[in-house]
Image (tube, rainbow, N blue to C red; front, side, top):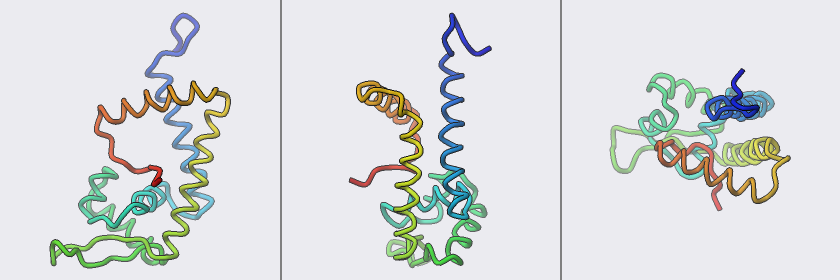
Length: 150
């Protein structure tokens, strides 16, 4: 089932690989003692502080859910709320020094797990796959959650 002419169909292949990536993300999150959403939030904040509304949009979560995530990470000393210089009524969420170190470690380890999923591919196949997946993400306006900062 899910294969056409001995080959897996595109939708099946995409869903099965999404499960693989989610599992790698979840496993690493568990090892750090936080939820996958908390791990995603830390990865997002690696590049810069974000407002609560921006975080909700990127994560696809309601404001109350974002507030809960930020509250838990703040209690753990990983993030802090700071005034938004553009709007005195709003706050931005930023990584603490400790949070930055943990976010970088978490990102690096999760990235290695995900790259390991494609270990059986040649360099050329990896480049082709990355280009095709990037194109799909870009054409569908997928928010940037996980990104290299180089």
